[in-house]
Length: 476
Image (cartoon, rainbow, N blue to C red; front, side, top):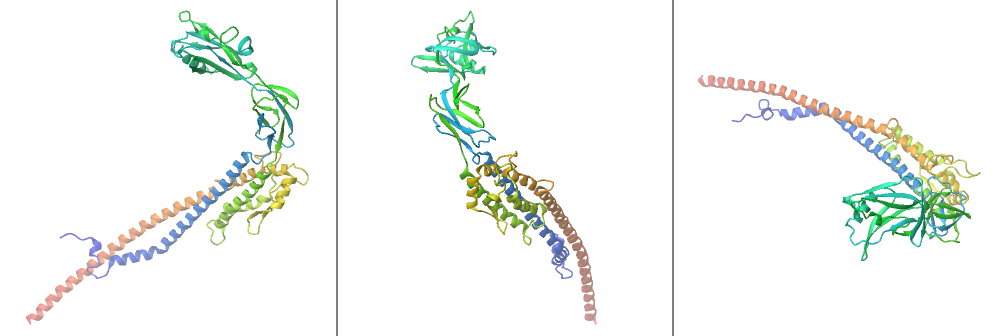
């Protein structure tokens, strides 16, 4: 017969359901502690979730505003009266208030382009040896270089070996030298040509002179320079731009040193046509930014109120959470710009951002419009990127609040670490409690097993004595 487990035989002697009794005793012993740890675990889980929600909210708010400010849409932008001649863009950190200039594009910068005579096979060897590349200024007449004055830079030697002696290989060797020119092979029905382009600018003209291998001559057919057969399809030129009537030369068509804070990109030359460079204030963008800021603030404020509610809030006793709430409430009164005109606004409250009784913000559209019309530069300065003479700016102020809020020593970062540790302690306590329950169950089960065995023995003795008594009575 199979041996039954002790839990199956318990109670056979006494008739008591020992397993149920032990379970009830153990549950009663640990019920309060179990409930306490369960409640603690649930509370800490809510606290960790609340901290995560607030950290994500403030960092996302700060990052979004910083990206908007850095995008440049909230700053005064330069304008061109003729984008077909010159386009303009603001340089980082530029102050463009009062900008006014006239530009006449008299000549675009151009690069020298030299193209060899056609050859039937782009792979067949032209010759071996080396090329010497020199930069300088050139004179070009009817597509032929008639004069060249070398610059101060060192000549560049480009070896041409058996492995790269065809047009395709020569182009590859020139490009591999990274010498400031780009070579390509152009092919049509007439054959293949080696075309080499330099950089823009008058001083970026170039010559290419072959030193031939006596055993494999032919490279000089690709020479570029006075007396060579290579055609100059485009001459190296500087751009000529007259700024407020003063002609100036630059080696490229993109220039950032002619008008303070403005990058000019030349599109076409038009002698005699004056292009006016002015500015456009970001009035509509600033108005939209203020309204978007208020909407996002209110969303974050709602989350903070929920987490810090004095009755139901998981973070109602968390100093970092209440500190974040306090700092955000002070933001509308924080000076964001200095050094403006007399009477110019310096705070959000002064441009129409109102704080309501429930802590939310709203926008007084009429006041905002008035401030944007009267003091556009001051309002723009409040949304300026970074710190400087004009004050911190809203982005920097919000960033400072965000940094303090998530600080790992005093902010929500510290709260998260504290709650995580507490959660670990609760888990340890629950594990210890489980071990204690198991130990008590084992001990009580053993004790009741011994008791049940004694009761069973007493019953066995009782049955034997009863049989004897019955036998004696029967004999009588």
